[in-house]
Image (tube, rainbow, N blue to C red):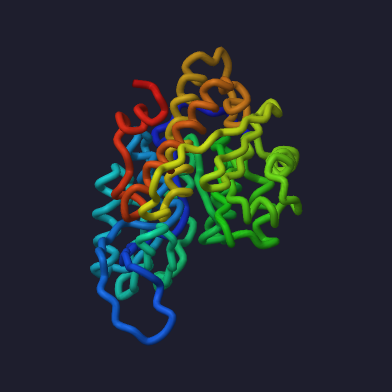
Length: 332
């Protein structure tokens, strides 16, 4: 792995960019019925895309690689990225294709979701020289398993140039093809479901340890309102407590916002480490030099952001201000 010089982009992501349409209802229909909608809204969506939007909101320089259609939905997706300072130059816009749309029913009383997804008809993006340059200019490559062929090429480039590979292992996303990808990633933060399938244990502390032993410098398992578990690069365990809310409006994007917020704070740690480094280091070595207190602060910040993001409809629109996050954490 090569040296890890100063970079122009903090985080580059590969994944699906969608438009999410939210419909808040009193209850899920069980048969034929007419029900009045309580409220509705639209928001940008997609796990990696939302993580980049979150990181961009909190100061990271981010760029997205994807392909979308040239339809009205695609234009809305690009416009939403701009709100969060996400660079969209590497998003391929395909003429005549439809962009991805998710229709999400949200139960008002609990914030539970039922998701109906229309996959984009745009061709999977091909790996281009510009993508290679973009990955080489980034501190972190963030992935979640979408666009597998492109993603594998990106991982190989990241290994060659020393870019840190970050994996979002969401619920219901694990399959055997993801095992080597998980093992190749430096930062592996996954949902309980993914962790249990990947490690074979339901004990999340043990699962975190196994993920770390299989190659992850930073291993994490998130468990919703129960908090999250981590193992840091030196093997030290850490339990990050949750920030429970009295009510939950919508859980959409909670996990994605956790990833984005964690990476945004990790970038700060990386920059600080690079500024004080006496020699050139690759990405893995940089992670090894990040202080425990900085990593813990990143986890706490991410937990607070994810918690506050459940207080509104959508994965991005309810994102809290820094002041709100600091108040919840107790940094005021």
